[in-house]
Image (tube, rainbow, N blue to C red):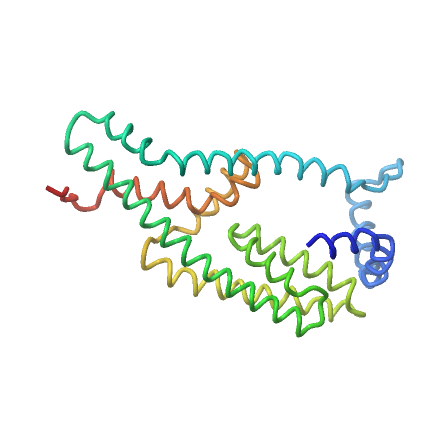
Length: 259
């Protein structure tokens, strides 16, 4: 991705000029909105300074890189010592039934997480291929990068697809001659992800474990606030872990422990 990104950075002034020309059609509605705002709330005598986008981007990327480093480091050490860690947790329980219940919860968590991640990864890979083909057919530059970004961002519910729509619209404004042509890619992506998110994934994943959409949304908001970018990626898996533990601790029917 370094080559295309470097090229876009080098063409930043040209791109900004092109975007302003494409969005000139919105000048009149925006001016009317500004006049309405001034009439209702009054105007400010001080001229607003142009926003600096570099500092907010750096402020976002720097902690996100640190969070990713901590996350992957923790994940590696956890995978290395997972069996010893599980044995130590089992030893904390005095009663045999408690030990068996803990082991059953851990096994179900592994089973559900493995199934969820496998299914979602396959779905995201297919989604990435479709997006790459669509970007190629529409004439977008570097279609493989759009497919890769779509596949990765789709792991983050709601937020990831929204970011991808903005990216497709921005690149479309630079690439295509008209605003209508630039809207083709984001509209097609919205239709694709809506179909995937509301019909395909729930149908497949729901056979293993059913997660309330409100729970996913609240989990996404909480873990993103707590852990930033890493929390957004972990929101759905952590919701599955919590749901499995809850179903074992408060079962609708009494769970029969193995002999």
